[in-house]
Length: 316
Image (cartoon, rainbow, N blue to C red):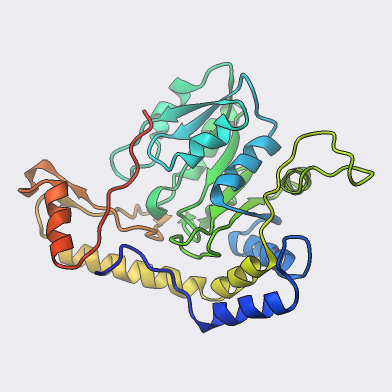
């Protein structure tokens, strides 16, 4: 069976992990791999800081908490996304308000955002769905008019760009996932990027149980969301090949585009002229005039040894 996705992992990652374990980097508290991974990832995205954590889910949860969002607040979120995006608001006591999708990229419809802003709206979390970015220039203008904190969900968009600028560098914070099926992986893992020194310090405190001074005096409830050193070592090896991974995915996507171009009823993923799509997943839409249903097409592919799957159910 041809898998829907397989990670790009080789001897380099294996050697990096073994070396980290031999150095004693088995927790998130010791060694150089985590700060080195953070520094290199920040450089890749184009931000001053990056804070490693246990998953994309906890990255979002940390970002919402660091922004001071809590009970009584509303957070606008993309309707078509993994539930983790909405849970970031929920687990901080806020209410997630879904913004419906536009029909071209599947990203949140920017024409609908201002109509959903209320006196309780504090933030917006745009998701760069399947690797195609949201028009962040336009979204940032909307957010500025309404004094909204922007937290980018970049779980699927490592290396995607808007007019040449990388996702995760527009908002107050950008949240990335390194789950096994993401563009680069540490097995499980995540990262929050930011240019703000205060947010960076806040994220690091909340990630590590909000230790105070003296050390075991805690004035607020933090989390244990620390990445391990050997995961960070694997992440560094993955960063060494991220450009190759992205170009490989883009080349495959363009091959699919060419093969499917003349088939009525199949809508292929877009790449708008201001965007660089990194094609985390090659997601097609099966139109009514295709001749068979989506599920029938999936069964046909499965019979021929080709894996496929459906994706997110809209939250609205």
